Length: 298
Image 1 (cartoon, rainbow, N blue to C red):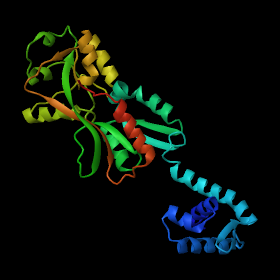
Image 2: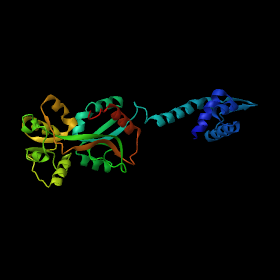
Image 3: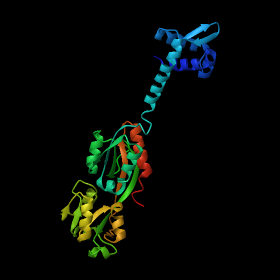
Image 4: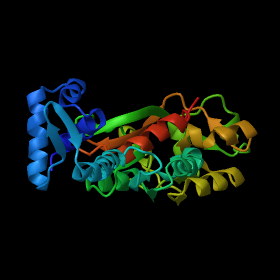
């Protein structure tokens, strides 16, 4: 059943005039006449009495008005269901690294659930490599990574920021009071680092390779909270993103080590693979993150 014929029928029944209905709808009178004839043929009953130039709904026509309105309303609801926040349903599969989750996203998820109570969030927390692999395999819809800059040829980056990675230590470490420290001095310290291949460890390893140096860290661990706690209570040296350690530096529980010859940076980026269908659910999640997520660094 042609929806246009139903809409025309409702307008004719409202105005009791083919000519007026045609004018309102932007059709010719003959087009309206043909549409009504098609509808009557399809239903097998007359919808209008045609007496001279006057028309009037038959009892069939009167009864059909309710059905036609119901069909139009159902179609409009079906067309709008995915964009109405109170009815929007589905699941967003989101991956992000642990450090950004703890630093930035804890207040965002509850607010998103408040706004869109029928959209579920399936959160995966892992390394940048794991997140990238799962996104490429379409196991994640969207990701927030802290890593190298992903190429625009393959990815759509909807937010990106440069994130400095710095060396920090306990205030009691002798390096904490030095105006400048060399990278070689750092390598002679007791080091806590991320495992090889994870996080920002590759930045450190690349620098070692450039200088033909080799070190064995005292501790390798992927949990940034544990790294910070160990560094605060012992004279270890570690490297962490500025946004992770800023508060601890301000409070005095950690001190930045100034290593002018080494400036390490990574990119935080909210991204998805090109070709990913931008559903209304995914769009409102992205919009919410962009609205609520503050700059990770000042």
